[in-house]
Picture 1 (cartoon, rainbow, N blue to C red):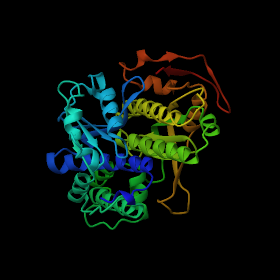
Picture 2: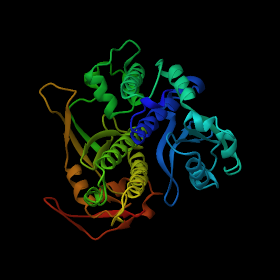
Picture 3: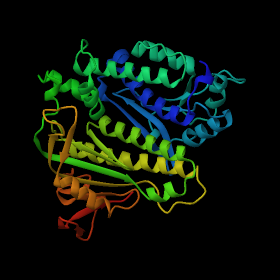
Length: 401
């Protein structure tokens, strides 16, 4: 591939991480027969304090593995990162079989080959696999039917359309023509959840997210700690944009990967639901797993941002709040299903609880706490009643990071 066509490498890495998540899931479905919902893929997985894996893939009953996107990094920095992350086993890497390194062709084919150099840095039982641009392009061609010639913005946007068409075919049927409503649904939900709705008899996409009052919905809200301070002390606007893009891309994927609905982003905050449009007995557990993942994503984003500024920041990571209640979903334009909004007391309560959640902490409402599985409750500590504006004094519980 022509490296001169490459856009900003940091934004490119964010794009490629999202691409590889989709690529791995679809390949495990087509080659190994693993249903898309049975492959768990997480980004910014905490391996040890301050150390995060780019991507961990857990394909059904197959051994998990990791993917590191290292395009644009030097050989020395790639080696140091691999040694630091995978030089010893941690609870998060137990049972993992390999580490895939996506790196520039010049690094992969260097002398000695990158794969040979990195193999000696891994913990016992882990093997290394390297993908250069040509290998990645081949996987893209085989999976999405798209011939990626270079990493230009135009090519990457065309590739994203090809990925969305592949997801739409799975979600809505092979003959579907991607339209704005399909794209909106794919933004809010995992495509395999939409496929489950269709297979259950919901054929018209307008009926996938009907305007209704949904009960027993878990609302999850997270926002970056000390965001104003980070922005004030960052002199390169590109760092601000890329940090927020990474936060949005990775938190969205976490919500939909865990079976939730990504609702919206408001500044440095993200809001999602579990239990819409259909509920299950696992919604609370999945929402808590998602909240824990958001904590790790926030910590990783903050650490990367801190590396690019001089001033030491007063806080790092995210505040997370969770509440259980009814959510009213409504069209924002008459008869629309493409532009949908939501209102709920549980959303207001989350906003109030977020104010008492510290960096890396998860604060939950009492109703949410009571709905948790018995095994999860001992990790929470009861707070003094929280004075919630326009709500009153509320009982809440904290899970400290």
